[in-house]
Length: 65
Image (cartoon, rainbow, N blue to C red; front, side):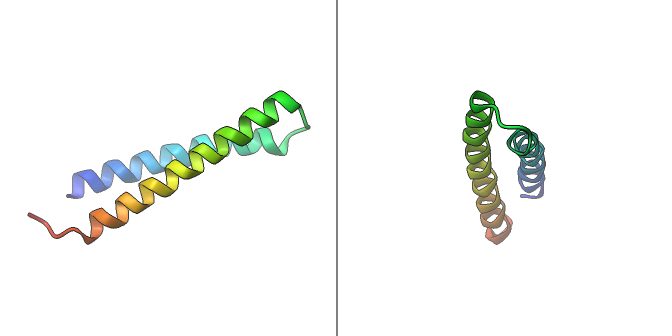
């Protein structure tokens, strides 16, 4: 269980780094193409982060075997 939880945490941290890169593009000067791609990738990445957090919560609630 601890190993799975640790992997989920690492994956979440990596996705947060990816999300931050998309935020930088969104905060920069407007470029329609780049902004639209960054917006879509931001939303996709945020959904993945939230899924990882749900998996982490479920893993923490699961009793050890």
